[in-house]
View 1: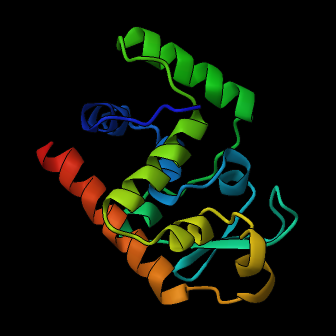
View 2 (view 1 turned 180 degrees about the vertical axis):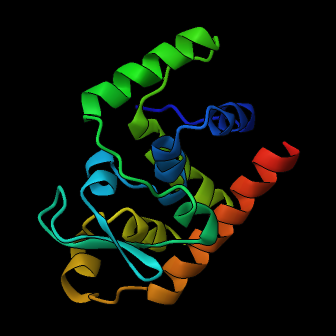
Length: 158
């Protein structure tokens, strides 16, 4: 529950060619949100998520390039990832670790915690959750673009 990927692991994952895993890394989505979502212009949408609410993420060009029909089950994705980690001598990780990497790296880029939480579709807690209904759309778009730029730098020059 505390695993995030290093730059070297991101490079190795990227060069594996697994578009679903690239997409999860770039968007912070869960497997089901990626597989059952749909493109709506520059957004990826899922009408009902784990918390019962709809969710959207901005699609930077790098994320949009990864979209294809993903039909493998979440269990198959995990099995395939486990085999890949063994084959490449990469410390094992899960698709959810890509979500954690996304959140941690956004914070490292200076994205405000409440914006990271919105990017993940987490429910805000306390007074903020009750009274603050703002979607932080421009901030979420900027965060997605920043992260896509950072990933591109990592996989190109890392």
